[in-house]
Image 1 (cartoon, rainbow, N blue to C red):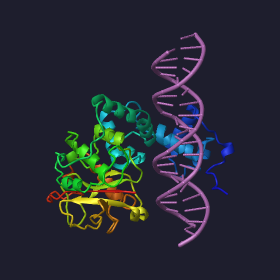
Image 2: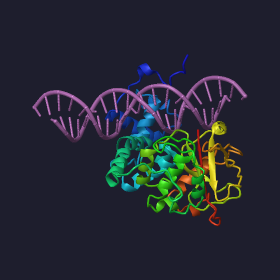
Image 3: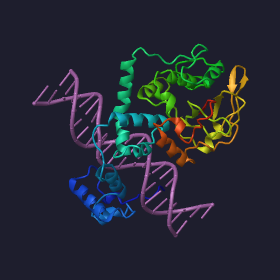
Image 4: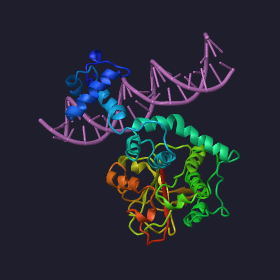
Length: 322
DNA sequence: AATTGAATCAACCGCCTCCGT
DNA sequence: CACGGAGGCGGTTGATTCAAT
């Protein structure tokens, strides 16, 4: 037996809203508010609609200050940046764009922006190949000295075309992004911060579910793990953390932060890194406030936010996947 | 002008989370 | 702690509009 429906499906109207219905709903809410009870609202307002439908209509269309029409370049940039940082958390993205609804942004992304970015990428760099696997002569130009040592560990890399096997593809993405010639990459909290970088990433290394990267592309503290911040990917639940493998690249592998993995041992040419310590710090589920701060700091120099200790120079990046 | 396929976007569905009991 | 109801969310659908032929 399934859950009880939220309303009497037989007696509610579905489909597009008429102007009369819109008027009724708008007038009622302007006069009485929602009363904190959407389920009861349609009856009170004289509407033969499901409460959820009323809520959706109000939030997405009728409420004041809703912005319709073309998205601006700035809005595009914000959407790209946040999508790269948090994935399809449309309500959170919408919260950063006054007047825009999650539904709007979702539709815009799915129907236009994604294609726009792809087209932009293909037009600007039609010859572009997947980022080559980095070698010792392919050291990132932006301050990321740790990557050179990281590359040395990537000896098992076999197929540069697809998939996140071991650690290497992600590091090549990282290197490519950093070599993208885009200065914002080095200063903002989101590594994939520009449309071009995002497209480049998506094109060759499609986003995997449950992928998350910790760390900073810029200076970070090294002693307590407090500098690590979510740079890219999606949330992961704490109960899944034990299934993660990953690595940590720092200037000194001896570090053992509470959110870090122990450095991988070389096992027949393969890195075998194990989740080693506490897992709490950067779980989006648990740290919504930190996460919000991260979002709100997007676009600011990372040294000004709470996640970065500007006095420390050691750099690190962590990738986790499963 | 008619047809057809693509694009758009409002709305729905079902799952998850939160909160009161 | 368990349960149930309501709100919230993201994915998907389908009607409508647009563009190409």
